[in-house]
Length: 167
Image 1 (cartoon, rainbow, N blue to C red):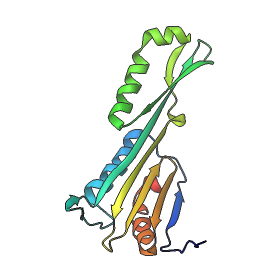
Image 2: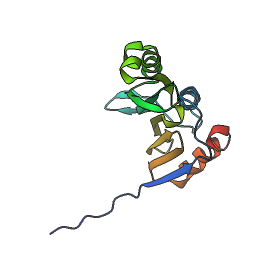
Image 3: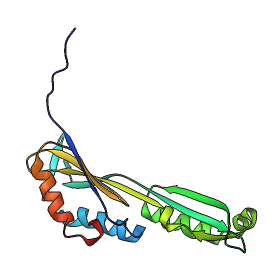
Image 4: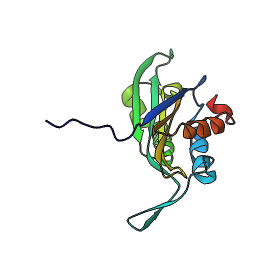
């Protein structure tokens, strides 16, 4: 029987944030700034003759939470919406909060549970060395994965050190 032979070494590094990112707007600002400004010095490349951007959003998910409270501020129900984009998240939140039929059915007033909400986005990055790696953001972590060159971590870490929300 043939053995598996290691071809490359890929690593993962995680930064746990001291304080969760405050809200979806702040989260989105961080992610879109990375894509727009390319602070990691990533480079575009071709796949099968098709040009690829240096940094792209490869996946994202946003979970909104609403709690329904009775007149004594006791939770009597909840609603959760998992959304594919920030725009869908904002629309879902607005619609849930404005839905009086749902509030009546739940037996309480809708109140956003922002602390219970979650946001995630993963960026696919092409290093100038040719290596492809991923930077994933959540409310409380930044994860670099599928890299082998430690210089990638140093670059991302140096950038993250300049972003107060990523302390």
